[in-house]
Image 1 (cartoon, rainbow, N blue to C red):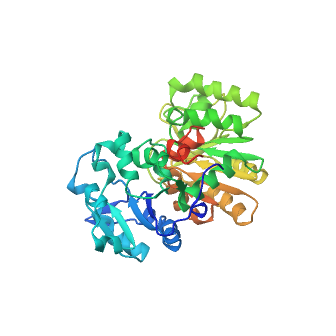
Image 2 (tube, rainbow, N blue to C red):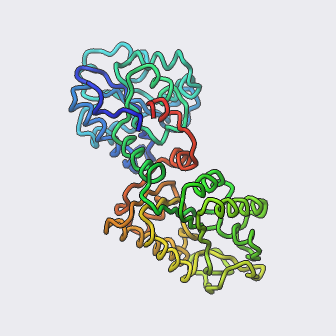
Image 3 (cartoon, one colour):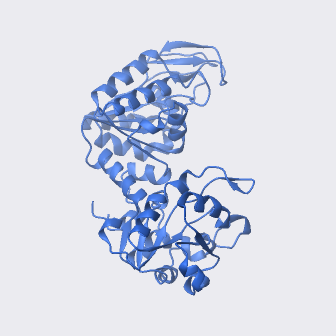
Length: 397
């Protein structure tokens, strides 16, 4: 593991600079989805229970190193106090944080204004990191979603104070290690979505580590075309064909079985409720110029469900079809429900992540049944790609 947790440090009477991600959506001046705020509660509770004072540091939007009134963290205060069940003292400037008045010191939780108002944050300026370190005795990083950025509040300050992972970071790292670093085998992955180009490093890394790789969505079209299929008007990245062939060749040498759709829901219009035919897909497929594959077909879906039954660990990133428009969500929903059922039966460990993925699993009504769902987006993908995350490395991970 290599990194410390809140359980490893004495926090009594200490100030704990706690990097959190509360970059939440806001509509009409009110937080519209408090999920990220709710996820930091266990960390704040743990610090308070150990006699520490949490000083929360977070970003909000992209102010580019300047104070932007519309991007003040003050807007999240009501939702934050509600989730935590504690009073939160809001500190508008770093100067104020360095010279806290008595009433602020008495507050249970302190929130410092948007850290990205300072140019030194994204530049990971050593002098700025030192100022942050001067505010506290201990550093706790609970923002896995920002761990792929080497910023002052995620990386710089971690080198200057005794540092640990917060509860959310700890859960994320533990889940990812169990999925990829030390998985129960056989281990497989569903990788879907529109484009091979955005998941290139991911596919290359996974074929070295997986027993089974299920490719779906638009990117499956590119792999089918690389084998000789003519898919008409389907979404295909023609410039990625050599890369798709390289990944398939690499999978053969590493012993990773790649499962591509063997049939698909083929329509002539990309819209909800469009009529479609289920057609066989393979190297000799020739679709008409206005036909497009919008989902995996029944035979493909059955093959995926069977593959799931042979696995002990499953990683999921991306849908199997155009899941946002019915009926082309059929394969994604069926596969998600099967993975969820196997997880509930303790037959499968399931780890999922990425924006589209979370939306698809929510749409299938199974998000709560997966072993772990990461909301970290870019950080989740970079971890799966085998890249070192600066914010994790700085914790000694």
